[in-house]
Figure 1: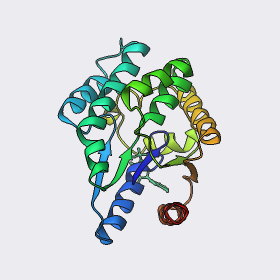
Figure 2: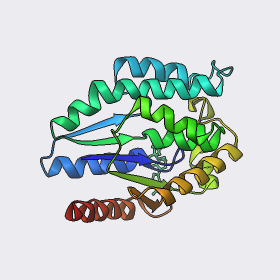
Figure 3: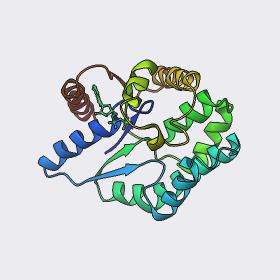
Figure 4: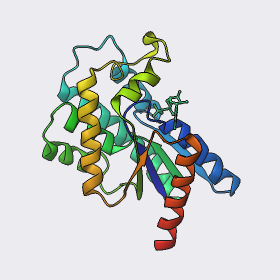
Length: 206
Ligand code: ADP
């Protein structure tokens, strides 16, 4: 089973992924976590270029192609082999991040974004996608709790950019049946329980 987690930075993805990983491991399932951008040696090198604050001249086109290159490598080198072996794969971000950030956020036409996905992932699409939704003000509050020089190139973007990204995610959620929208203001435990319930319902319906 292939599950992805989406949302603006600081929405709680890594927190929930760790809890879900533990849940599957307790059940003795084989689980693999992949993180985006990155996850293979080549993809991690691309990640360094993408997130470095030195690269403030990076164009939109370069950015979307680099994110997608990193993903294309990850899909073929790791993700498809894991799924072929029957593992549970949880991805911290996947192609919906590109649609939300580079499409809705930076304004690359959605048709173009779709074509790029066709090349980078083909038909390797998550079965379930959990979108953890928080208001941008809450992301800023959580961001304020960490030191500003720990933030990466994307995390230091302007507030209006994150508003557009969030609206983009909500729009994708309306169009994609695999999306589950979770209220990220609920407690960590409540969100985890809801995720387990959704996975259970999904598996019963298969
Ligand atoms: P992401 O991986 O989406 O960037 P994290 O899981 O790292 O987000 O969480 C960002 C911050 O918010 C962390 O300090 C985390 O402890 C906190 N956090 C996560 N989930 C919640 C929640 N439901 N309520 C309040 N704080 C949360």
